[in-house]
Image 1 (cartoon, one colour):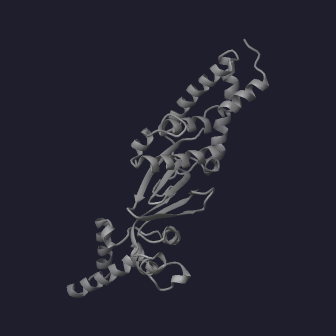
Image 2 (tube, one colour):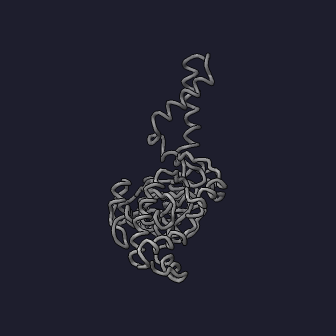
Length: 310
C-alpha cells in the first residue's frame, strides 16, 4: 500500500474541494494515484449528491441580470445560508442567470439542459456543485422579461454581491426615450416592488380565485345587509384591495412621489424620459417563498456527520 502523506491529501483537497478524510480515503483506495483519486471522489461525490437531493433547500440566492431590453431573475436554492456566501455558489447562480438571458429558456428542465459557460450543461454544474460543496442545491425557477424598445430595470435587496441577494426584481419599461432615464425609473419602481410586494400589474392580472376569496370575505363581513348595498360594499372593498396588491394602483413608497400611484409616477416620467412610457410587467422573487422549511437539530446533525452517518 502506498504511503499517503499530508501533502498528497492537501493536494487532492485543493483539486476537488472534498473533505480531508474523504481525500485520505480516496488515496488509500487507489494506492496514492492523485488523478484516480479525483475520479474516485467524483463518483463518490455524485452518489452523495443523489442522496442529498431529498433534503429541503430553502436558502440560497436570487440572481438578477439585465441587458438593455431584456432581463432575467433566477432562484437557486441551497440548504443553508452559509453556502450563499460561498464564492463558487455565487458564481454558479450568476452563470445560470447568464444562461437564461442568453438562451431565452425559463422552464427549469430546459435551463438545466442548456449549455453551461465552463462546459457541460447547467444540470451537470449543479451536480458538481452538490458534490463539491456537500449540500443539496436546486434551480427552483427562472423568469425573463423583454421589451421591443426601452429597458428592463432591476433591484436586488440584501445583496451579497452585485446582482445576487435575497429579493430580486425586474421591471419592463417600454419607451423610445432616454435609456438612462428609463434605467433610473426602472430601479425606483423595482425598489418599490421589493418593498410593497404587489401580486399583479393591475386587476386583470389577479388570480380569479384570489379575487373570489376577497369578495367572499367582504360579503361575510357584511352579511345581512340588502343585496344592492352589499354589492356596493364589495365594489368599494375591491377598489381598496387593488390599491394594496396591484402595482399600478399602489401608492408609491418614495417620499418624492407622495400621494401618487405607480401609474401616475410612470405617466409623470414621460417628460424626463422624452417619450411616453409604458410599464409592461414585473417579476419579483423572494428567496424561499412558499417553501416549507424543515426544522432541524443542528447539534444532532453535527454528531451524525462526525460519526459518519451524515
